Image 1: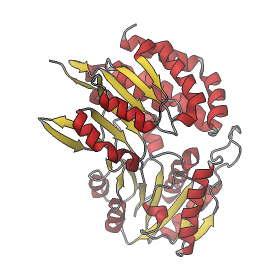
Image 2: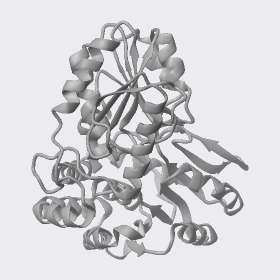
Image 3: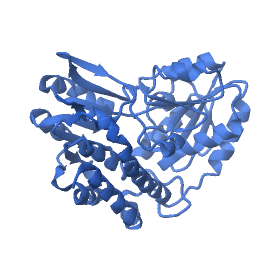
Image 4: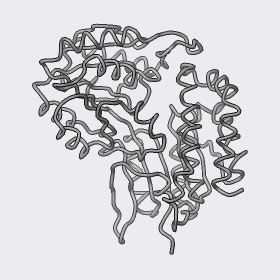
Length: 395
């Protein structure tokens, strides 16, 4: 079976088995049902869109073997997009899920192998050992890794010495700017939904909200109402938008909320890790603004205007994506220098639904590529097409 034909077969299988996959994922992952269902639907849309990538591969060759280390919050859309891109480019795929996700990993691997055959090679060793084995294997032309920037940075020297190309997709601390001219109800509804999607456990979730001081009080009221309307409950409930967090996530989120309140922030809604929390009076130096939260917390920082909002948005080690409602046109253009993607008048959820295979990738510590170019080891960042980066120009 050719690459495109195998991708079409995988698409057919995902669509045909969507209901069964939903039930298995729900039991294995403890993710809200509507999030699981949306992700399976996204996986199908991504596979259907793979046919559009054929022109990008014209005249290009595979790298050989691609080692793929998937993130802990992956359901189905991420694995099929990453493995499918590597396979469509003609590579073998060495695949590793986090070990705590073994039950679900076995299901996804079986699904991929039914379509792609032995080109999919599952691995379950610890993450650092998986990376070390890939760096030591001359057949591995590239690594595609999702995870913590602190975990990945120590591997830079191994990448340089081995010559193996590394595509790293890291964490986010995405800013959401609400500036003059914004529709406050629309902006509040958008950031409430996008910031708490999968209980906030998405690297592209907005985690810090900068609001023009002239709009601040009205926006906080709108945001509180929008967040209060989000259903909280058990993972298997059809209506649940925000479900329970793991113990580790719960401790981290509660700690950030407590520190913010101790520093003068005000809770308008929530206050625990198991519900949407809206905070105002938040300062730029607080952990809830500086460190990844990965929970359903919506902290609002009042700013004097567009210039200060942009300065605060850029004042972060992370630069995955940013969202802008209102404000002058120079704002998104400026943020594009520090963030991989900038959305205007829509969130990453809207953009993803319209563009299931859009180029992806952050800047700074949110993601990068290590590779040798012109006999020099380089590091670059910004949006990139996975299928292109996992292939090379033909000879």
